[in-house]
Amino acid sequence: MTLSKSNRFSWFTRMNLAYTLLVVVWGAYVRATGSGAGCGDHWPLCNGEVIPRPERIQTVIEFAHRASSGISLILVGIGYFWARKVAEKGSWIRRMAFLGVIAILLEAALGAGLVLLKLVEFDQSQARAVSIALHLVNTLFLIATLSTQAWLASDPRFFASGRRGILPSDRQFWITFFVFLALGVSGAITALGDTLFPSESLLAGVAEDFREGSHFLVRLRVIHPVLAVLWVMLAFFWSNRLESGSLLPFRNLLLGGVILQFLIGFLNWVLMAPNWLQLVHLFFADLVFIAFFISGLAYEARKSSIPA
Image 1 (tube, rainbow, N blue to C red):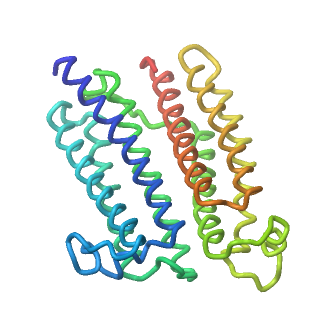
Image 2: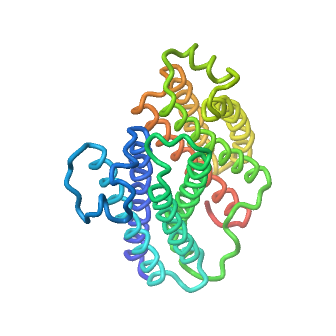
């Protein structure tokens, strides 16, 4: 494989990751605007049509999300076949490309399930909360596979087979990772509660969180800030592993992202979660997740004497 082929594939993996983040944020906009039923209960068709008539804005929003998600599936598929062409059998590039296909197919299946089971728009059921949680976990799985591909593709040596494991083996990393998963799930459920049960004021919202008889989506909102504080503490502890040499830029990027994201989350709470700020909050949360996950890859590479 020539260096030019490596560079082209590396550029594609980064572009694919960036596009996926935009699709994820647009999916959150679908939820925030109550547009999940914009195509009715039809899937993959929209209101029974391949290209629907834009009779209401919710249809336009939902159809745009389906179209962008379809493009994402195609891009991940291209990445898989491209990886098979440029990387050796048994390489981690190929493995991550395959996992990316699994993740994007699961993403499509979960999205279809939301529509076909009518767990969209104003649905307030426990089933919707569970489906939202599963969707969030799988989205992070997809982002992790694409982030890993992008990181590996930056070094031509990872296109060869026979490399040792590249996933982090550090226990502290995985504790922090699973706390982030819990934080993400609680954030998705909190955002759903904020959308379905908007508060008249900040104090009224806090009172509703603790009032007996409040809907479970409202009462669950208090979990998210607690997990956010725990995550910040664990992220700072993890960053102590990244204080030397080539790992220092990963530490600085991670800590800067964690601090900024915490401030955005606090502002989101104070302003009672306006739609635009929810999207900003989600976007930066995904960026922080990428920075954290890649820091784990770089740390493992350093331990294995592979330049980070």
